[in-house]
Amino acid sequence: MDRPKFPTTLPEFQQLFPDDLACAKYLETLRWPRGFICPKCNHEGEPYRFPSRSSVVLRCRKCNVNTSLTSGTVMQSSHTALATWFWAAYLVTTQTPGQSAVQFQRQLGISRYETAFQILHKLRSAMIRPDHDTIGGEHPVEVDECMIGCRVRGHTIVGAVEARIRPDASKRTVKHRRKYDVGAPFRQLLYAGRVRLRMVEGRDEQSLLSFIKENVTQRSAIRTDGFKSYRQLPHLGYKHHPLILGNNAGLADDHLPIIHLVFSNLKTWILGTHHGAIQSQHLQAYLNEFTFRFNRRFYPMTSFNSVLGLAVKTVPPTYQQLYSGSWVHPSAGRR
Image (cartoon, rainbow, N blue to C red; front, side, top):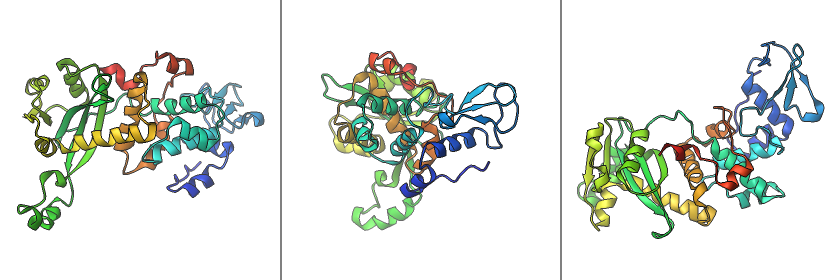
């Protein structure tokens, strides 16, 4: 079976996935590109299809073992229609502002808010690869912290982002030479590469340095402010470029322009889409979603399979785990 070309527009998406049967065929094509192979006995051949199960379950004609198309994905054991899951993945990965559970419930006509909330969180659980690579290397990395919420009851977020030189940097310098006398400011010659975000207990050395070690490639150039917790970076194998900012906002914009832009976009998204109403036990999941969509902003359609858990085997949280707070979001457990 040939894998269908993934749609790049809403009408194309509707045409490719009009119902559950079309979604099931897509899952089967991804799992067995050359035709069904029984996971139990490795028998190749057309399986028996249960008409009453919307073709989600296939039975091997040799050993009679049933195989679910959604096994090992975020849709496993779900009673929600496949088409609803596909629409959820499409909306989450292609809309820049993302989706709140209330918006999602209203747009897809889901009867219960809890169902919409759980679907979105299961999709978020697939947004962090356990083996995700580190950032930096040839690109300098900006590292800083911010507060989500008020300073008294807010949460500390540490972030790292690649500061990449724009391909047209030389043209920008010439274009703005008259305006700025010496060309465009350095921050206007940069754009954001890959980003990493994590909620931490505080600005202590252990929390900040462990985040950097797990997310930034060694020997990378790292720009930070003059905070004392970063002083050990040279001893950890990094090229450290600190700058004591004081209360000078202009210095901050010049030295760490990209990470401040990321934090600004993050806060705007949380306030605009979710109205700031994010509980602390779920904050890391929302940071994961922001990171996932930000890093794929130039090619959002390719992330569709990832959030459904089709790229890597995913164990999604249950409803009880989400509401009890016992579910540990992937990045949160690596502090």
